[in-house]
Length: 153
Length: 420
Image (cartoon, rainbow over all chains, first blue to last red):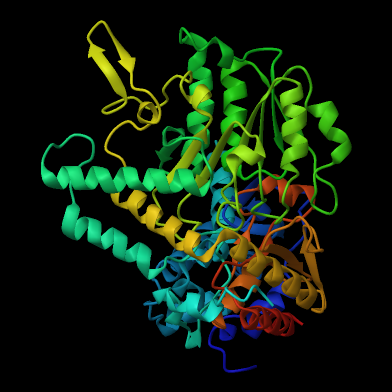
């Protein structure tokens, strides 16, 4: 890659997830579905979750949008499938904090390990117009999980 | 490539911001349809007002108040001359084009209960016509007016090339049509609409014609009397003036009968607890302390454009458009959204790049110092029409050079490489 600094934001991890997104299929058997949009760019995601014993047993999505929104949703899916809801929401909080840091966050080793591929989005935090793109899938996941919790007796 | 009197390098020197660098590269600003930059003359006029004349207008008897009023009203004269209005009273200062268009729509719904405004009343059975290529500011106010009055909201469709479907005009605009409001030059497609054709049909059926000239007044000579329209909206910040000031122009006989929209100070004739009578236009539509410095800044922008000459401005931008359309056609995977020939179109070019979202295009171009807009450009029905979520848009102005278009073309090619 060239020395253009912004292009480093579009590093291999993001471009790989954009071109080959993970979990990008709508589940047939699901407990909640949400549709989130980012009105400024027209990014969209429809996301379904299946919850079993307090954990995200399966998650799938369909979406349209920029590389940041689509890749971030893909990375998020890898991270939360199989995790209990509390851990998934804790990761969501961690990612949200990173995105809202305006680029000033210094991730500790432990947090960086927890976020895995999602650390690739650290550079996005410096671009306020793109933060919503990176958060789209994460907010959808949070919304879908909240629906399943609300549905419990 | 342009008329000999037009010197783009000299013009660039009038715009302080054009010396800026972005990410270590010289700024290539191709987002003038979003907002234009401001020449030194405009910045100076605003500073001079606050530094030397600041006062409220039309109220104070003291010297500063008198100077402020004179400067403010002189801007009205300048704007009137610029668009060849029949009189200065036909120029109403608004916040922007959106407010001017809302003013018309709300005035028309206020006519429902205003004695003497019967000619503006609309209701069930009446129709309001716009086009499918409208900016939301000339679309949503009419949808809302239809909702408030029970009138029917209709639109002229656009074809694959980004032009109005000619055969629909006589059908959609019919004897039930009361208002035809359309964009002169599309902000999303660059299309310049056939004003004469639409005015002829609208007037033949007795409809009022409203023109959204936000994207035409900065780029071509606009003569409201020659166009034969009834009302027109445009904004200052796209024509090298400041934000916060726009213009509603209307034929005086219409403005004189239109009910007020916003009420308050300076728009009244006599106020009594039992009732109020209203000032004559334009003041009837300018409630409250206006945007004084901004209007004066707009006057300076009009002077600036007048000195260059709008024919020269138009020639320059038409040459740029032809150059850009040809150059962009060479980029693999690039598709022009809108007319791809430099005929009846302005210097605003939307495009799609295969496999790359417009926000990614825009971000990577920004890294090279190139500013373009990505999104639906507040004209979402246009994107829906072409089956895309968004476009990337490059738009030019008086300070744009062919070298900047070369930079755009190279930049887009580079974006394609990153995503290859």
